[in-house]
Image (cartoon, rainbow, N blue to C red; front, side):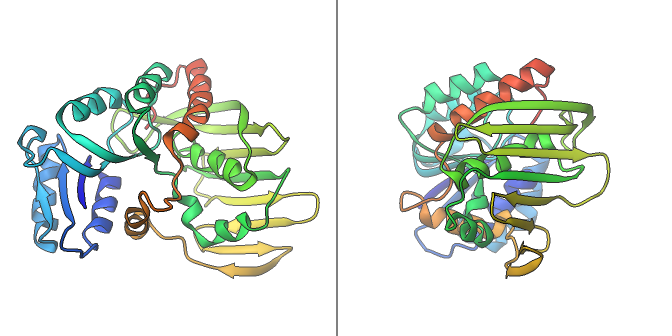
Length: 297
């Protein structure tokens, strides 16, 4: 498999750590980042860890024109421009786009039109975790999910939980309400997030409430239906039902999930297709637009 990884910042490195564990001889990993300091760091830290790793100083100098997979872990800003450049330079069989796919509605639409005939996934991997696979088998309907914690970048990460509601219930979110308390600078320079609450509603009356407060509290997720309550502590990998621990399974980091995702591309990949998550992205971005919130990644 020929893999092109573009964007090797914090999350991109986690992808890379997972990719270099794939020992198949026919796997070739090409990486690129426009930040020369990042490329220098990657060269010093990772080059000797895999004989299948190739570091590109420029996309124009890539020795291949056809790739089986392109992973984009760049920031959401202007990603439509980058995708157009990639399409013009290379033939890509499958894509993985980091969430959020874009931070402006009109740019999201441009990406959709550029890739509407392509095989494109969005990196929302919670359905790879055993706890949520266990709950999926319960065939939950008309549920209420409440996720609450502190300082966990709700603007960027809420789509993980909104999509989780869709996946667990096989239903679509049709309405999103946002209650913003305060913007704050995120760890990524020039980008922001906010404290507040996001509420989503599905067509069949399931609901999710997602909250982020200005404190250090680890977030927990509670799922209720008319019969019972499930409590998930992702940080400890614990699922409780009616106060009893019924499943312990540590949540894997991106580096550990990546090999499983790569192996399942085109053969039962659990990541959502971009075409299936597109409307949810639009709903969120339309609400962000009302807030004048465009510097989210």
